[in-house]
Image 1 (cartoon, rainbow, N blue to C red):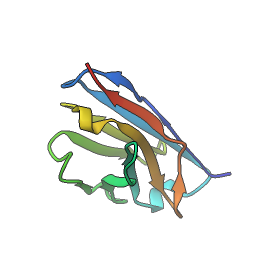
Image 2: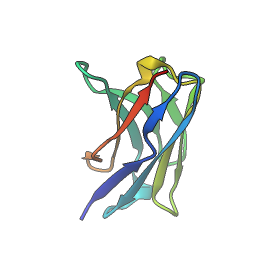
Image 3: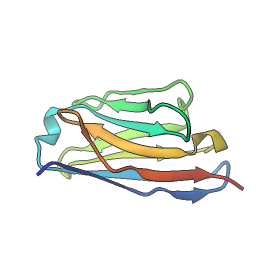
Image 4: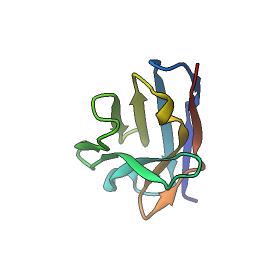
Amino acid sequence: QVQLVESGGGLVQPGGSLNLSCAASGFAFGLYAMNWYRQAPGKERELVAHISISGSANYADSVKGRFTISRDNGKKMVYLQMNSLKPEDTAIYYCNGGLGYWGQGTQVTVSS
């Protein structure tokens, strides 16, 4: 059974940090690129960060220099370190990868 389970979301003040985690199971994690997406209320889901099998990363312009995606193939985990958070980063964050698998999402709220 394929599962992607996100964790680490929460409420944080502007300028703060959060580290999201995604635990994968049920597929050959090391053979697939992985992604973090987000969806804010009333907006379309957007790609935030991508990491290749080898660990090369790409980011949306809106998060470059603030977010870092990483992966641990041995643990079948992918992470998103988010620094200098802004209110506009508020969204549900989803882990994605493999053959189009999605997690259930984790809420990130940036507010004072």
